Image (cartoon, rainbow, N blue to C red; front, side, top):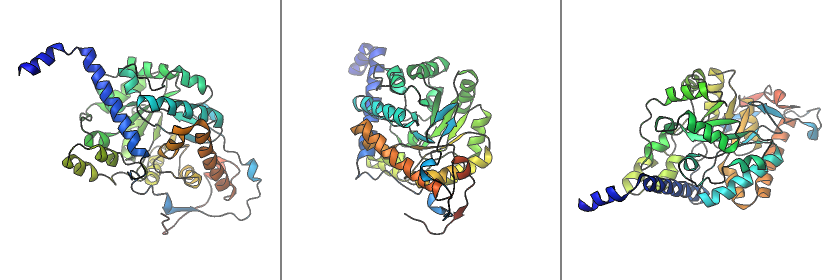
Length: 366
């Protein structure tokens, strides 16, 4: 007891905050290692896009190179309807990753969402999330990010403004990850009042809010609640990509913790299903589709099903560790695939692609 009391007396609030920040950075670093490990098999479930196939157009009457992929999202012009979705990592690697992603986004004219800025908010470890990122990508749609649970545990309007100002961002992502928090040791368990906090923030923040899941999907009912609360756009972020339950299972400290998390390995709404449901429920809301989208053909399907923007994260992560050029090469392949999908449906642009004949198919392609 004396030892515990001595520690309580001698541990300052600043030191406790620094220790908590170190723990958070270590957790983010673990996440990065696990997602990058090919033996980890964190990609789980089906995104649902295999249930759909475009009707092939054998007479497109188009020039492939003239297919227009340009679009706008939240007031920003994009050369292609793509988002480099939020990624995370330890402070040292994250700085390099974020620089490569920003430079690639600028070169390609696509959007960029950063990983959670919680560490940067709580410590000096900004992970490269500074105004320098905007300097590297002056023309891109740039999105800040914070967890929804933090809105009821200390992050208010002032902190949200700091997050946006930190990057000179165009919007703030509020990520919803109750499953991950529930299976994560030390995760945020109290989600009471989150919707009300989102509503209050949406009414007062100077930039739009985007609500995003992290791989378990947003359903129609929750989407309506979020839009009614003032959220400007939704990223359905469905199942079919990285399972954060599996990631947390691999971080588990005991067999029991691992067993609890692995029961939810395939939990979630498949991305295609979430997209269809949310588009029907919120016909006028800008939507982002992410979660297991493997290539430009699936990106085209997502756009046809109602997405305005298509996001990828884990698939681009290995390249982001290497160089800006590796990230550019990855997304250039995806853009070329999307362009050919438009061409082979007779779609001169994204507006036409949204009307392209889409078939349901019983033939799932794994």
